[in-house]
Length: 453
Image (cartoon, helix red, strand yellow):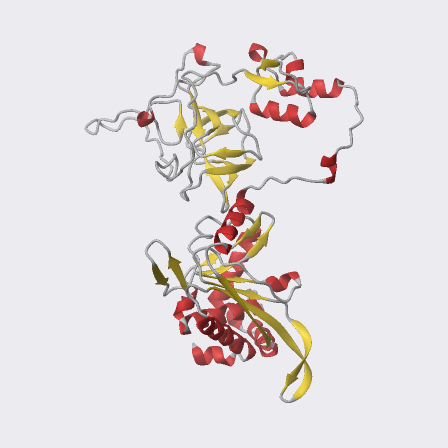
């Protein structure tokens, strides 16, 4: 076996401290190239594909899918060739001092380069964002493994009967997980692997030969516990921060959007919108952008440290989207500069990317205002919670046929409810009401969008 290198979970550039292993794209024995995608991780903001910084053969996956891993923890071992001595076949080269390590790796000393010497060796690519950034985390210090630590080290496995006796066993983390899932006691198995280690085959054989036991009914069968990870964990923290930091006020406005629905049908027939989805949300977004231009303070943030209100003269418009991974809010950057056809395309691209789980951390950052379309769930309105760092969020309810007084007569009209939540430290009732009233007026009569553009 050649030289083994371990790849640590990197900070992908958003200051994360941990991530979930979603899916491995390689298995032990596979040949990998530099920059080849080897796995997907889920951070607090998005699912990110990680490339491999090495060329070689995968020898071991150090963490299994579904595991939460801290930044800086080795996740995969790659045999990069070289002339490692035979006695290192079962161990990783001792890590050098931190200052001499290649970012994001364990197991090799960074070569010293003479700037005057001719370039005779192949240049080793450096992947941007790899390695732990000093000072980006505040987690407690972790114990470093001893030098020349064996790849499979004996650990004490607790006896399933709850007794104090503990037996040292050799088993890799994926094997331990399999044993836990199948209810197999590692201490009761004689391993057939190298140095007496327990393999997956040992676990499966023990599980198949174990006598069937009728499951005992417990209180746990009446409940289910779901780990809080990834987007759900980030969303929960953000909502708590927002709810208990910014004093929320929510106002509602019920409006007749019959003319907006007529305008949507007419826009769909225009050549400029060919191949583009045109929905009422497009005109809601345009109306909010124009209202923000008429009332700039609604598009601002409270800077607690500086004791200042930061007014944004650009709009990074967030659109809340429900996905299989939870609630995400991708942003349309500089939305105020987009024409109506371009805004429609941006909304379509944003929705497709979010549903596919491909929104990047950059897509989910630096918003200034948000729209949440609760109408798609068949509800009229709600009290939306502000995204941290923003001062306003607009909820757009379902459009229903309702008896409505129109031109002095009761008629069936298309009616919806708008709900605007705002940060009362920045936005007082008069300003919030003016913004909501302007949005409603433009949706009642889309011609006002032309007049106020």
